[in-house]
Length: 235
Image 1 (cartoon, one colour):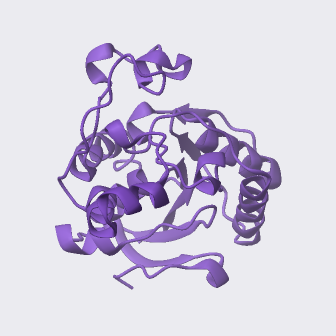
Image 2 (image 1 turned 45 degrees about the vertical axis):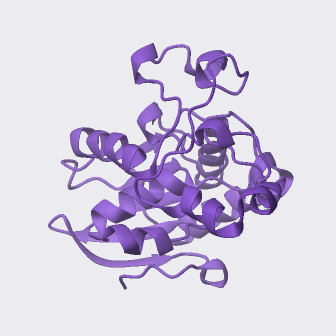
């Protein structure tokens, strides 16, 4: 048996401010750091030795993983991959979700957040929130950096990376620190969710999702913090 642990970063500053964050590289709130610390404690209680660590390029995911590793007393190298980044929200980036509900209506904002293949308008490349203007992404080839993404777009880059880098490591215990939409994309793939089911899947911040694998097949899965668990739709 091997384990795959998926952790959405702890609460970020823009989560708290209810802003569309996407590729903007914001840090954790104090509450987010506490969520990450508890995540590390919960993983430690399972006494699972993590063989490989992965993170997105983004500060909130990296710092979540750093806090988890500190709790585990395990400082193995982390492989950072931009393909695990949050979905790019295009022209919605930096805007307040509640204000946009008033402007566009709750249904339209829900579609932007949860639909499978709807992209927001592209973000102007001159906008300081565009990834080409953020130092974190300077090593990513320009042609790889999006102006906007749907969940489908996010899924395609996440799953391509997963298939190439992670799926074949069948005997390793792996922890991935990423984001709500990149983890939703992984769950769609792992649990074979259809386009409608994935729109209903909510990923809580800082709550490890422990997936047990036998012969590369999922035998069980659960959130380690049951008080903050979300419906997995599958188990």
